[in-house]
Amino acid sequence: MSDIIRRDPRAEWIARNRLHPLHAAMQPVQYSWMGPNGVIRKNVHGVGFIGPNGIKRIDRSGAQQGGAAKRTAAVEVQLPLHQVPAPAFYINVVPDMVGGRLSSHDRDLLGLARQLAGDDGAVLAVVFGEHKENAFATAGVDRLLVLDGHEFDGYSPEQRVHGLRAVDNQFNPRHWLLPDSRSGGGELGRRFAASLKERPATRVWQIKGEECIGRAGAGQQDLARPLPRMILAAAECAEPVSDTRHEVLPVELSTSLARSLPRIEDLGAVAVDPGAIPMAEAEFIFSGGNGVKDWALFHKTAAALGATEGASRVAVDDGFMARDRQVGASGTWVTARVYVAVGISGAIQHLQGIGACDKVVAINLDPGCDMIKRADLSVIGESAAILQALILAVEAYRNGAKRDAA
Image (cartoon, rainbow, N blue to C red; front, side):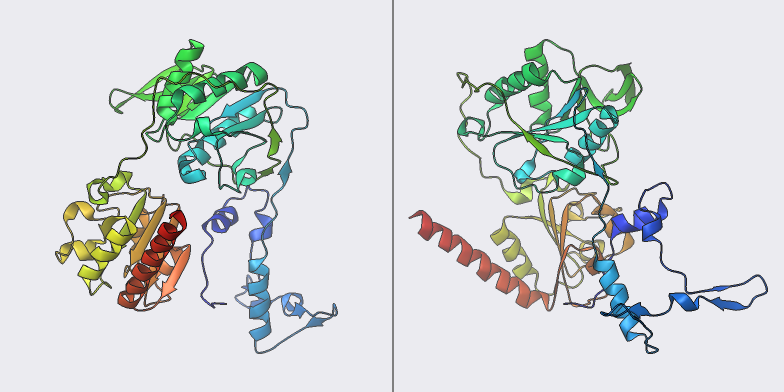
């Protein structure tokens, strides 16, 4: 295993939040401190570690204590379980589930649903088709309803509205929450509201009591209105759930879902040039920095992966990439699901710009740079050799898929 110390932003946030139930458990043990007279005091009982036989051992070299500290930090903190045996009402959420997983927008939406549910209500997540998500418990989902079937594949808003109508008849939720996004939630929510003959609240970013506030006037004004049953919420509408875990009990429809006659035919996805996708909307970004020495190989790798190209400020200033490709606080704030940083050390402005990215992969020679600490997956080595190996791996994978299909 690597000896690189990786940051845990969530643990750091809990350590700063005195109101969090796990705040005390995240505080470091204080072994020495300065007394009121300027004399250094030591806690002799805090020195050492418990051996395998239950006997306390003291290693003056500090090696064993460091190992014990690493093992303690690696233990996963068990969040308290929130249970709702008999819900008084339901708050239904229909996440986008782009790529089969919860996005940051979906997690914000579930956090808002958790606020509306309180202690007596249950958050019911309605998911269409197969999914790859295994973190519903920590996202705030009490009940999970999966509507699977080929009729929900691809672009099928009419069939999905038909399924949501069946869910509405059975559970009669107090509120429906959908993300007001371009990934499908905005259109589906408006279609569903029209089907129920209800007026939804759109672009909602805050809820206070029985009133909600949404964006209006091209995002320059706030519109307050009474809280309706149908809510289409914007990103960052609430803090994601972070201090509890939930049961995620599966539920099913009591009646079989009949297939509606579709008036829309899905002809499949249309190939789009990754370079034509705006940086703020790209889902997969392949970004290069000062550590990239072979830019032709960089462009070839991005084309092989089908990723949108980005760059750090240094690479843009040196003329290797256009100004509209710059990522960071001084460039474009991105929200990609996967962000690959090649030869980027991780200046604070760049880390701010990728703060909303779900997964960050770093390729760098320096194992101690800030980008490596931020990354979910790190590859230490020469970027040229790694990119060549990556191209070969992608080609082998695609050739294997073609042989399997044949």
